Length: 201
Image (cartoon, rainbow, N blue to C red; front, side):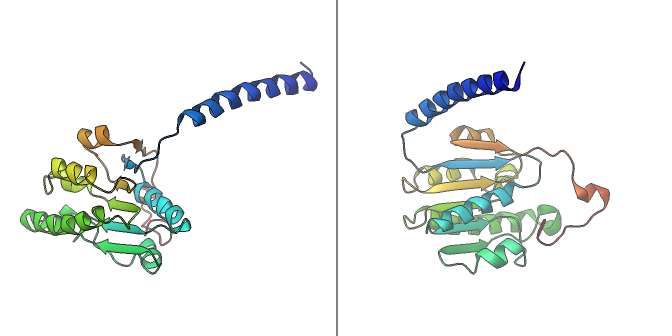
């Protein structure tokens, strides 16, 4: 097949592909606040959420972040985003359960954090709410999944919510508009490489 024939076939395929994509775009005409789930064992769930946060801030939107489980206030994302206008940032955890080793304290911390999250979910001025690592609180029974779903369902109509964390419960996945599962293929930590500033922290 000559280069000219290849180019002609390619152009014909792209015309057909563009027609299919244009038709799909035309049908997607609804506007609503989305619930997005970023789950799975791979690295990058929170990073993806903070990428959406940067995008929202670029449009002048107000963003609220509730970090469950995590207790560090010296991460790069917190250091950068918490200084930006239009950002409300809360570090609500005391560390992973294997750090605290105190179930009652973990439950109390999670429930206090959820009260802050509820305030953001009821604020129509906040366009995007990120509930970082909240899936752990549901997995261990610190927070009630049904209550979380009810509060999310009652949020302002155009407010977007992003939830991150491993092991998202099926009820959460069923309620979501978009679900991405990030797969773990390889991680530097297993080769003995510690968390790196700017990449992991």
